[in-house]
Length: 189
Image (cartoon, rainbow, N blue to C red; front, side, top):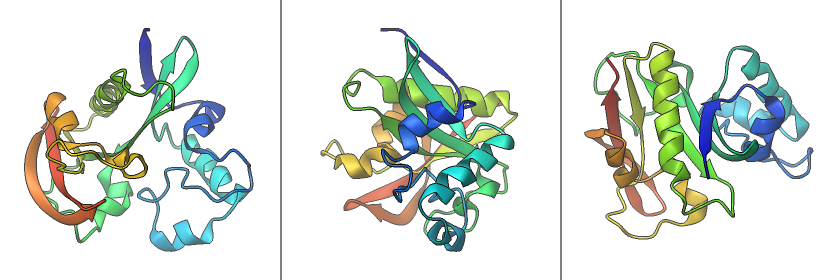
């Protein structure tokens, strides 16, 4: 299996990972951290996918993993200033650096357990670096090796980020699935 990770430039490929099975269903579309809460609540059904299509005109909203042309994974990555992390009171800013954030890592069922999340995180780092980011942050759970519920595993684990070269930059007051989240950072210059 040769996994290729590249910027998410094809809407239908992105929809495979973050869109609903029914076009009118209300699913995240990975917008929860990307747009203000009021707009996130306002967008329903097909309006969510339409909004993502518009966002993609500004540039790829993250990276996708492909296995022989099939989409198998997704990582949301974007400048923190354009996300809700810019104003999040539970996730601190450690300095004024114009960092990028990676906040969602998803691997399709049937492809999990093959290291694709590691490749997605590496691809997110490469995309941020190529886009001129001085550093990249993630906000994974610090689960100390305990099992994380699959529905809450999208933020990643501290160990995943450490393996990618990130270091703990700060504690947060955010908790997900009973686990504290930590701010992990990797300098890119």
